[in-house]
Length: 427
Image (cartoon, rainbow, N blue to C red):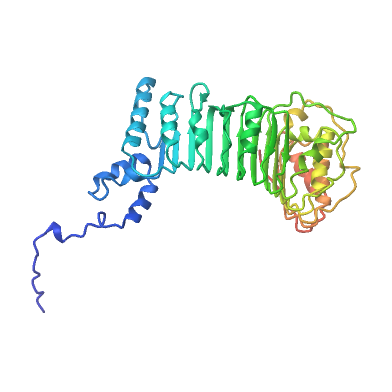
């Protein structure tokens, strides 16, 4: 048997070990730090001398619950700790700051925010996010209106009052305003003075009720709140729209001879691709004259979602107008407002006498929250008879009260598409 030769043991010498962490290229270290929270990025300074001051050059500063851990319930201590951390980071920071986000669940509108906003105005911030989760509206410091490099602005629970010499954000592409207060004229001025604006989100706003949108570069518009009217001017590139009118109060039928809301709404939306009509906005669109079809069809519209009261004759007519005006529609979602249907008198069914129209591209249909009333079933039957390429219709009732009867009705309906599948989902 061959004997194993003895191995020679070499004494351990730490200098022989390659320090992989310290020898990483600078751009790799920057990439790693960019994926860490600010808290962890600061803690990385203990790894080696090369990492010690790397975090102070981070261009993205995010102060949120993940970055700033506060274990106490004492609001004074919470405020002091948050302020000290932000002050400390800004004091030591070197280099440009491209993104600044302040969004801590325990943050209130403290006066220290003013000095941070003022400090950042001396740099070239491209993305600014401020979310005040507690307390009253924070009045935004006037120096923010001088951020001319700003590309993305996101504000939550703020009061906006631009100075008289404000000329707009010339580089801004994305604006997200939620739980904000501002005057009507100031709102219109901000929107109109952002020539590159592509994305606009408005949620739960106060101080203005007329959404006059003048934004020639706008591609995406998402709004939800209480307002009187919405109109678009020059928004010929707008492709994605989601609108929710949260209250039913004050919506009156206008049966005069003026242009109806449907025609006015779509006048500057020739290339819309995706539309969501939420809450009570269909009732608003149904005010005034409702044509059988829009003067200009929505040729690019492929997705349509509508929240509808099937017991409302005008809403049914408005929905059918949209369907007939969207020849290339591929996906349709109908959500019933059953809280109104349960109390309303049964309206005459529009679709029973509505002329047949082939939805030649419609492949997917979802119908959510129905209760099995005649008007709902007639609408479903109408869709099944006029969708020759339908692949799947998903039906989900609001409750199980009439589940089995609803299934029997659905199975009884004829279908234009021999490949159509009807899927029943339990509520």
